Length: 61
Image (cartoon, rainbow, N blue to C red; front, side, top):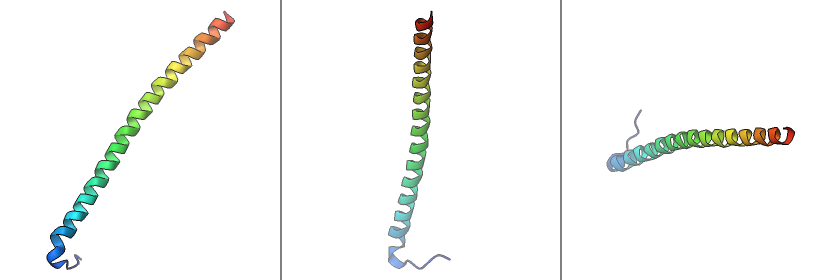
């Protein structure tokens, strides 16, 4: 199934390998970054929720 690449086989296969490697790295980095941002957002939302509850308690109490 492999096409005949002749003298360029090394360059072509190397390019495919480099491209695939970069795609894997970018996907992994995106997933890692997404998890970090999600955690940070949850912390910010929790702080905002606590502050809102304190402000509401102060207003009513």
